Length: 552
Image (cartoon, rainbow, N blue to C red; front, top):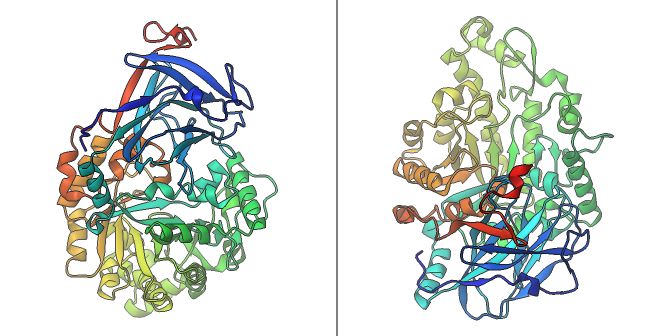
C-alpha cells in the first residue's frame, strides 16, 4: 500500500508512564533514557539491559481512527536474535515480540518496521522487556503512525476478511517457545499465535513435543519433556522443563491454550508430530529419547548388514499402534487437523524381520542382497507405511484433516517408505507439504514441482510448498512465492515461523503472500513497510563518522 497521508513521528518516549521508572544509566529495575539524533529526527530512546527486570510502560497515543503503526527499533549488534521488545495496544490479548534485523557496530542503525493496522481510538501503546528465558537487550527509538483514509481503511478490512487469500501455513515446533521464552502463563503462549491474526495465514501447525512420545503438554500416552533428567545439557532445556512444571501447577495445558486461542482468531490449528524422532545421541540422549524407544529394542530399525539404526520401525504393529495412540490423544482436543512431519527423522523402516521375511515369501529374493533402491523392494516395504496411514484415517474423526510434510521428489519419498500415489488414491491425506529436504538438513535440494503437480491432479489433496531458507530478504520471499504459485502451488508453508514473525521486515512481506493475484504489485516496497535509519549521534556522541566503537 502507498499511503496517502503523511507520517507522524512520536520520539519523546521519556513521556511514557509511569514516569518513575526511568534513569539516565542502565539499571536493573529502571528503563534507561538515551538521547539520539538522525538526519530527520531527534528524540529520547528507551533501553533496558539484558539483566534488567523493568515494569511495563505505556504511551498515551491520543489518536482517533485507523492508522498504520510502525516502530523504530535499535539493535546494537547486527542481525542477531539477542535484542527485542514486546509491544501491545490496550485492547490486544497479548504482547508481540519484535526484533531488530539491521544495525551493527560499524554505523548504528534504527530498523523502522511495520507493526500493524489498528483503530487507535482510546488506545495506549505498551512496551515491555522480554524476561524469563533467553536474555535480551531492549531498545525502542520511536513510534511512527500514518492515518488511513476511508478508502485505505476499507481496503485493510477487505483484505483481512477475504477467504480467497488465506493460503499460508505457519509452523511452531512446540519446543523453541519453551526453550527461549520459558512461558509461565497463557498470555506467554498466546504471544506466539497473535502475529497470525489479520494476515493471510489460514493454518498454524503446532508440534506436540520434541517427537514421538516425548511431549510438551500433560500427556497420558507419552511422557513430559525432562521428566527423568537430573542435569540438562543446555540452559534452554532446563527452561522447557521448568516452564512445563509451572504451567502444569497452574493447570494450564499448552495444547488446549493453543487450540482455544487459534480458533478465537479464526486460525485453523493442526497439531504436528515428528514421525521418526524417537531417540538421540549424547549429549541429548536423556532429553530426547523416550521410554517407548528404551523399552522396545526389538522394534528398532535394522540396516541391511544387521546393524541397529536409532529409529523405531513402522514395520511393527506395536510401533504403529503407539503412534496412533499418541495422535488420538491429541485428536481428543478437537484440533482442525493432524500434521505428520515425515521431513524429520527418516528412515521409518529398513530391513526389519517382518519386511525381510515377507518379501522373501512373496518374491523368493532376499532384499538384503538387492540394491538399496530396488523398486520392487521399496514398493513392498512402503505398503507398511500406507497401512499405517489407512489405520490412522479410520481412527480419526472425518472432521479432522490429515496433512503430511513429505520430501523433495518421488525417489526420495519412496526410498523412505512414503508411497504418495497410494495415499492419494485411497484419500488418506488432505494436504501435502513438499519440503526441500536433504539428509544433512541444509535444505539445499529443490522440490520437484512437476512431480507434485502430476501427483495431486484430479485428487482432493491440496499442494503446499515449503518456503526456505528460514531467513531471506522480503524481495526473495516475493520472488519465491510468485514462482511457486505460477508452478501450481495451492499455498505456501513456513517452517519454524516462530523465528520469522519477530523479524518484521521479513514479516511485512510474508504475512501478505496469500494475495497471489497482487504479488506483482509488491515489488520495490522498501521505504514503505521497512527502512533503515542512520543514527548521527547517541547521547551527543557522534557515531555517523569515525564512530568510537571502531576503537574496540
